[in-house]
Image (tube, rainbow, N blue to C red; front, side, top):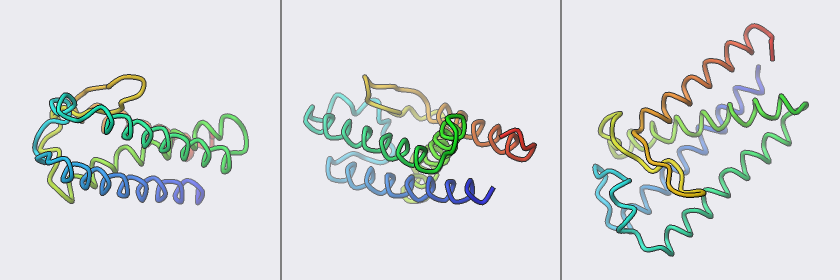
Length: 146
């Protein structure tokens, strides 16, 4: 159980770091915090979209490496990845909201991923999926199924 608390902390720290990077990117590109990210895709130069895609790949590589290092069995590695990913994704939005009050509500549209092409949805979708993932894994850990 201690391992999963540390993984959650890692995911939260990673989320905050990514949130800060996104805030700086928005400011550098002149993006207003309350704007929907999906509307802004057309305004961002393709070169910056490419750079953002490399950041997304790096994030997933980091999570996969962590899962491979920490997990014991393949199932354990998958659970570690999903658990850490869920905390990262959930706390990314929490961090953005604490720092900038963005997103203004759960129905705000966001670009969730750019790879392989843009995934656009209201922020309640990743928040809901991440929350459900955390709850399911926590229940399975408590019942010693995992």
